[in-house]
Image (cartoon, rainbow, N blue to C red; front, side, top):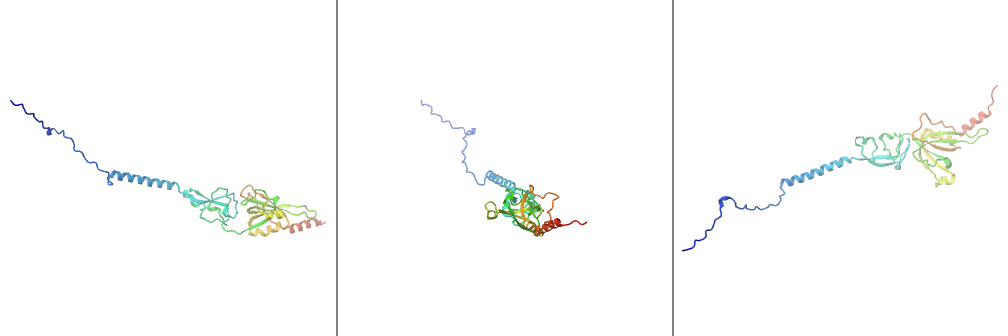
Length: 254
């Protein structure tokens, strides 16, 4: 009697339990929409950020006063300095640093650090600079260019008339101060040269008024001339002497 042969069991293919076929992974493509969208987003962010930064730094360079300057001061390069500021729509109201201000004359006082308004310059006027020889002891130590000064003259006593001191120039802008403690003028004569600006028609009478007289200057605390003051009418020493002699020799009529 023969033994039964083993039966081989075939897999049941109808049940659908077959293993899935593995798929091959693909590398990223440059045409991937997500990659393109990310790159565009980064570029837009960079452009928007640069636009915001540039808009926030809309600064212009304008002139500002380097020191206190009175009206009538003839400007030099050291009187002003360029500063960057953001003025937006008001930029045309101030003097751009590209403007040449050397030789221009101020029409109004400007404080140190103040921006120079476009309206602060006056039209060319008929003014001249006059050098005044002033004793060193009659010049304030803090006298400097750009200030306003009053100038006093003291004449010599004549006969019975005592020496008189009077104002010969009021609120004059100082253009320069030379002959300090180390200057040649001060060392040789004890004088300092104070250069002031005056209208051309006042230069002659002023020079006549100070001839032969000792001068002294006084600094005005403010950069503007006090209200109600006017420059006195200068007279020459000869005229003053003649008037004094006439008054001393006059005989009253009966």
